[in-house]
Image (cartoon, rainbow, N blue to C red; front, side):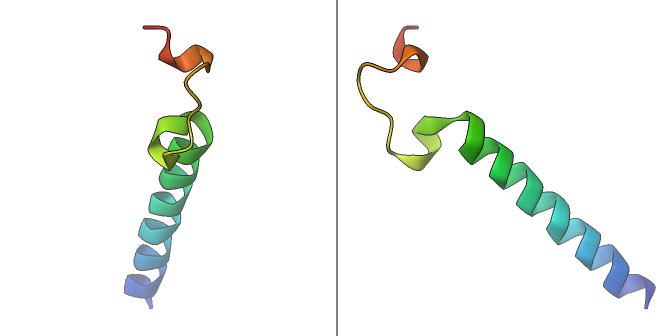
Length: 41
C-alpha cells in the first residue's frame, strides 16, 4: 500500500513540474511567437 502512495506522489510531482514548465516557458510548447518578451535576451 505504501508503494502505491509513493508512486502516486511521484507521478503527481512530475505532472505538477511539467505543468509549471509548460505554463511559464512558452518555448517548451513550441508556440512562442517571435515578438514575445521572452525572446529579448
